[in-house]
Amino acid sequence: MKAGVGAEDVSDAEVIVAELTANVERHAAEPYEVRVISVADVPIWCEVVDGSPDTEKVEVSLQRLRAQGTTDVPFLAEDTLAENGRGLLLTYRLSGGRCAVYATTTSSTGTPGKAVGFALAVGGRG
Image (cartoon, rainbow, N blue to C red; front, side, top):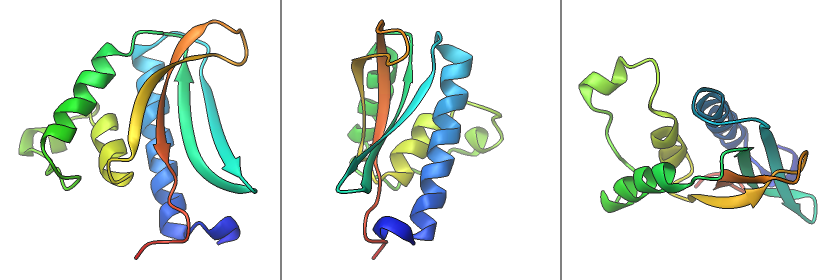
């Protein structure tokens, strides 16, 4: 793959971005932005930004996942049938726990917002 990112890692990143953008569309205010940060033309970090500056609910969810002590968090039977509510879980699992929420400023309006970001795998798996 281009830039040292493997096909499976690109697929994981696409799933994460899709889940996070669905979350912001349902739960957050506009504007919505997707940013990819590169170093020496290698994408290393991706973030989905929204116009809602409150990070608390997302941080609590991520802390609960981290408290599990593993990125191999099993889906509960009732959760596997849910139509929504798994975006952060998938983000956490597919990024190997390398994700965070933080305050930011939206690029399009310069207003306060928040970002949920995750590390992109570089050099492929394994």
